[in-house]
Amino acid sequence: MHNLNRQKSVIINGLFIISLIAMLSSIGFSATDMGNVSIVSVPSGAYVFTDAHPLTVWSTPTKLPLPAGQHSIRLEKIGYLPYNAVVGIKGGNTSFLSVNLVPGPTGNLTLYTFPSGAIVNVYSQGKYDSAFRISNFKNLVLNAGSYVAKISKDGYENHEVAFNITGSHHTALQVGLKPLQFGNLSAISTPSGANVYINDKYSGVTPYEGTYAAGNYSVKLELAGYEPKFYPKVVVVSGRLSRVYAVFSDVTTTTMPSGNSSNTTTTTISTTTTIPSNVTTTTIPNITTTTITTTTTTMPSVSAYGNITIDVSPRVVYVYLDGSVSEYSIAPLTITRVAPGMHSLMLDKPGYLTEFMTVTVPDGKTAIVNLTLKPLPPYKGNMTITSNPSGGFVLIDRAYRGVTPLVVNDLVIGNYTVSVGKVGYLARQFREEVLPGKTTSVAAYLSLIVPTSNNGSLMVLTNPDKASVYINDTYIGTSPLNVSLESKNYTLRLQKTGYKNETRIVEVITSKNVTVSVNLTPSVRAGTEQFPTRSYIDNINSIIRMIFG
Image (cartoon, rainbow, N blue to C red; front, side, top):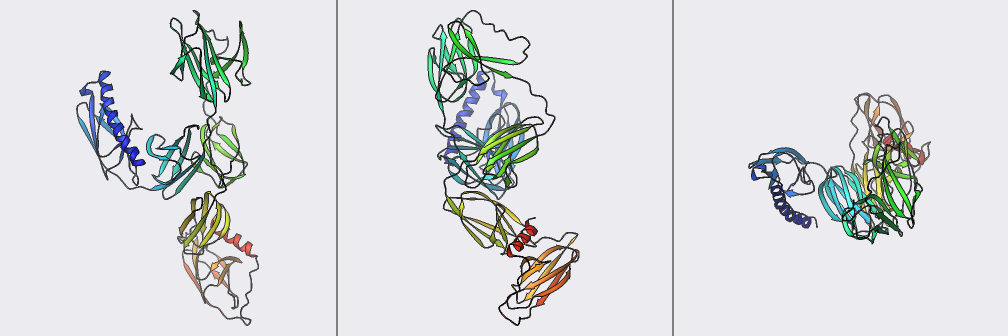
């Protein structure tokens, strides 16, 4: 599908070049006003975007006609860092651009829409046409960076989603499309026979009536011999009829109310339309009308941060503000020190439709978001987690699930944060998606913590091995074991079924490797084990705090 789309793009590009030359000639450009740029890349096959036409795509090697002057050019290829350049074009000459692309990180995008079958265009940096797909799809490879997905489907409202791709990570989006709601729009004039333009498109003559998706429309009426009538905002309400009535006359001057410096637009709509609470009523002889008044005011300059307070059901969700994810949050919560203006907000929870919205934060005030997430169909999948070395503790959305290797079955579909850690090793965190009836695999390669200036390392060896190791009464794993600890004295206790407990006082020294090797002594009553003073759950919680903080 993507290749077919690019083939169509090549044909369109050829037509575009012909049209561009014809257009420039028609407005007075001569051959000396036009030049060319020849672009090659290593490797070839990079997509080329120009400043004036970011949505028109060429593929290297290529030769493009451009007007004389300075032009910005961008090259993109999956697996390579984007390349940006400014090229000077001289009339009648050809400029040359040769680029060696540098390998860069990639990630994956999975996108589900409900219903499926929507057209999805993905734009890098929000403007460069980087990918085309039909939903649902998964594992679309994209370069690391910021993107906007524009989603459309007949009978549904268009939708835009901003998201980020990070290297070696999987981003998953679930979008519920809203069905379009329809109402009727009527235009009447005295005298009749006026041309009707809705959103600047000719639609018919008065008296006119048509069906439109619910929303705001501009309406213009033109009649020969009279000044045109323009209504910039006419509201079409689902299941209702909205009317625009115009009386053409020689008097065309509109007098603004005194003392009002705002820009005011007046639209006349018949009383068959449901009117918002801010509407006032006026009377024209023999015609009862209502007047909707919209006022445009100048916003004050930005001087103070604001906040966003979020109350959502269910209460535990992931919150993304402008593409950056917060911790797994419990609502109600408040995000503080947010710059005034418009921000993208995404709320995500496994088993529920991901919600996207735009939030406007007032200067120095708090924006309030109240929302109930819609549950997804009760589909489930599985997840397997492994680590090297094994024995890593696994948290899924902050909940302890066991140690690696681990299989977790019957997870509700959706996105999860998986944390894998082990005492003495750097913890790893992954963002993974569980798909219906599928098994998601997570492999964590754990690295030893490098001792800091205040730390040393402790190696614990036992004969036989697999003894439980406790440091200051906290269980940290089984022998053999290597752990990085702050420099000071510790109480080391070793336990193994069928052997006597062993206790040592150990000093960990800054930047040193301390090794403790113990030969365990069989106990008199083989097969018994002295259990730790803390409960099993307390020990688990202690090690989780030690690993993950």
